[in-house]
Image 1 (tube, rainbow, N blue to C red):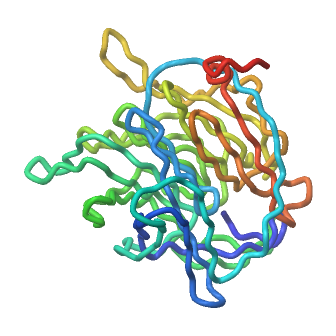
Image 2 (image 1 turned 180 degrees about the vertical axis):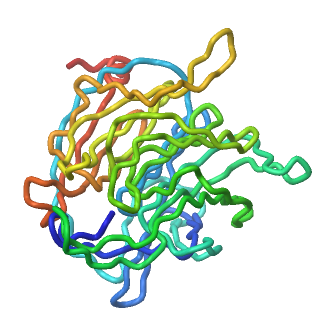
Length: 349
């Protein structure tokens, strides 16, 4: 996000100078930070068929990944929550039945990125990946893509005066979570930040976001995870600061919310199937033409939101909206449930 006093309010930057790993010890979830500091954790929820979505994301950067077929009708309901004041040390207890004591989750620094980052997009891929023909095979890779890699500066001209990023990167990093190391990096065709990333059918897709001139990036950059070559899919949809996810048994990437080129917050949910299969042979589509999902609109227009998926139920949390001139974050949690899942559970509309 481009830290704006107007219209998007005063927001602190998150510079991701290191990759943090979550170490699972047992049943309590604990996040610890020194006094007067901020602790941030990111956890990944596996959906199915090699796909993951972050259960918690930094800023609005969401990730999604892989699966197979299906059209979906989606309905939404909304709940609002009041969060307690934050503190330097926070812990949340989950009451589960475990053998062997009370587990905790802690964060530790395990590696450095090539540069400081904020407003990146992260996607996780499962499978067997060999980046170098003579090198090792990786079963999991986390891709950290693009982002702002410099200090913010004040720009008072134009329709949206505020603090803007002075440099963005096209750098894409592959992080091996098993060995907790950065194993490769590439340059994507276009620098971007405030975008989303997704892995589908063995391809990494970078969707939306903005360039250094604050113009929306409408093309989609694609990294083939079989030969690690780049290609670009043209498009016309202008969107940034949105959130992406996938559903089980679906080959589509979904994304929701965000801002258009004029910073009008959006409610629409979109579905895009980037790969077609003919006679068993997958092929990338030629253009980025997502379709709007009927019944999938958010109840409150917003960007800078986060999403999580559990059992094909999508939770869209927080964000900013133009309705209050971006002066305060939202405490709205919108629950989006595919109709097909309701029917399997014997529920009715």
